[in-house]
Amino acid sequence: MNQQSKNMGPLSLIIIASCDDAIYVRSTGVEAVLQVHGEILSKTSSELAIMRGIGTTSRIYMVLENMRGTFDAAVLRVYLRISAPDGGKPTSEVYLGSLGLFGLRNASLPNSEGTNGMQCYLDITPQVAHFKGAALSIDTQLQVSIRPRNKLPDGVEISIERMRIYVETIKNLPTKA
Image: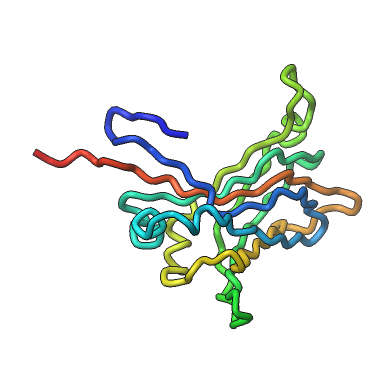
């Protein structure tokens, strides 16, 4: 997906990791593993140097897709840690942000296109700076924890159909005259 902006060069979106299995947030939360995409690892070193360009020419986003539920009053906190592929010590858990699910009940109703659910986006660029120097390989595990700020009532669950982490890179930045 590329798009053009008047103020920037073309944008390039690359999926770094994803979890395509539905997960369910219940009373105290859930943990999921995002799989690093092999095709990203085959990119050239300049394209894969995500960590070096963070905040200048690249932004990193976590997207929680097709969230459904009946409890509008939930606030979910999202955390990330990276486990080393060689069985080494995982990084410390980093808080990525909170999601207020106002309107979740209405977003969960079927619409005319036959799709439903809420999409939530977190710009995690500043937090990912914590992981500078962490090497990504096909065996790297990105462990995501999602916890309600307050315990969800018994019987309430919030489903998340898919989670992805994207890198958005601005190419061909205009030079100042």
